[in-house]
Structure formats: C-alpha cells, structure tokens
Image 1: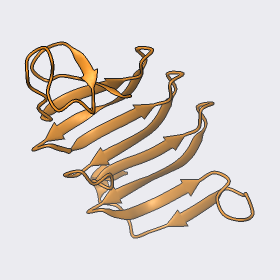
Image 2: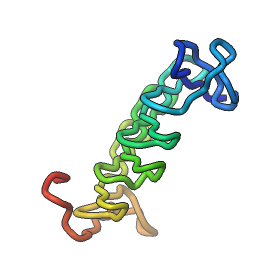
Image 3: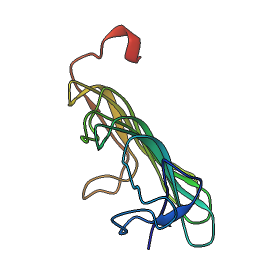
Image 4: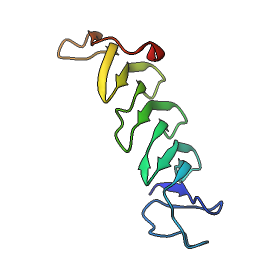
Length: 130
C-alpha cells in the first residue's frame, strides 16, 4: 500500500482509493508526497492535468534517495537530469534527456556483461542542461 497526500485536505490515503474518505476528493493535480506505511518519504513530485510533470524524486524506505527524474506529461524522459542511486547511496547511473532522448555523457556503474563502468556519449545537450 502506498500512501499519498490528498490535495484538498491534509489526510494521507492509499493511492488505490478512488476518493479521499475525509473530503471526498482525490485530485491528482499539483505537488504531492507519497509515504511508506512507516511514515518515511517514498516519493515527491507534481501532477499536471493528472500526469506526473516536472521534477520527481523517489526514496528507499531507509530514506536514501533512489532517483531523480524530470517527467514530461507522464514520461520520465522529460528534459533534464536523470540519476539513479543504490541503497548505499552510490551513484549507479547519471545522464540527461532533451526532448525525450538521451544527450551528452551518460554514466552507468557496473553495466553490461563485463560488470565495468560504462560511459556513453550522445549528441550534446543544450547549454542549459550541462
């Protein structure tokens, strides 16, 4: 069960609930946070027109950051930074997207059959992304 914050009242409810039992609304619009049953932050981001849009972060139950993404109308390949961390906080992958395509340098720790770190180069990102 994932808990989400109702956007009309301060109550946390299950993301499977069709409506908030407190105020009757579960509107997916604007900033939100989701929490584990323990109360630990699971994710934070923003909904726009019912879809994830803009900066998004998710966390392991330990509180360690798991990833940073930029959504564009529900697509996690929105313009900007992509980062993924393991549960020990080690950076496992990092790169940028522009117009839903990889750009610039992408790094992946222990990727591929060799288990070695991998760096790939894509067309340059616009200046504001570097």
